[in-house]
Image (tube, rainbow, N blue to C red):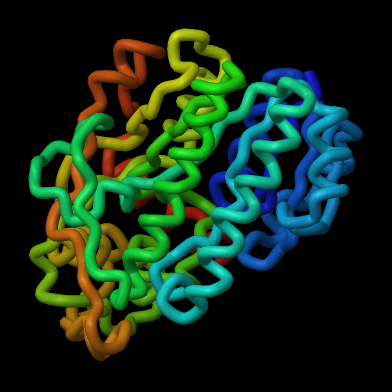
Length: 321
């Protein structure tokens, strides 16, 4: 098939493109390179089976042409990272909601199956752990910019599922939890590459808040494998599905594990949230996915442990050194 990947030059998108090429598909990437990078897909155009269009998902004519010539659409284009969301809230909302609307309209016009990568942020400040797909979402005040991203991604899901209900457009919404691996940048606040780079440089490893907040980290190879399986699973259509790893670790313990794995002498320094992100920042204390639905639909079980993940990232960061 010919498959469109919006945001295909991003971290997750570039790994997805490689997997689709390995599966024998032709891939069309639409990416404005605002947070993605050509380096992530460097060499893939030389295969003759991947082509890149540098433009925005808000460009209606471009999106229409891309969708028309594709058999399936993976929609990954989005604002990413806490830092970008805090610093550029207008861009965050417009690129998420507007871009998804544009892509969905084209998919509906040409009846193309559509997969949306959503986020665990949609659960907001939910207190029931682990998070199940049908749980209520609890959002913070609209004056707190952090929640604009969560609400925008929730609107994406509402819109995609509305197309399923009204037009029976084949859609699936995948809520991704913390996804990490080679080629991920720490530029926009991603914690694991930031910790690894600080530790390798012998710099202080900076933990935001008191470090007791917990997260579950998933290797990007597990994630993209699940995405392709869900796209081709008819039982997943019209569903929301968590994709992640349910092994929980505190951010403070993560910092210790990174220091040990790199053999670093770095110290751990705690930085208050208001110093890192400005006044009024709110964080989720725990973020753990329930994975039963993904397992029932596609047999999903994460295969890479945190030690495997750290080893891959450290190898990537030290390549050629």
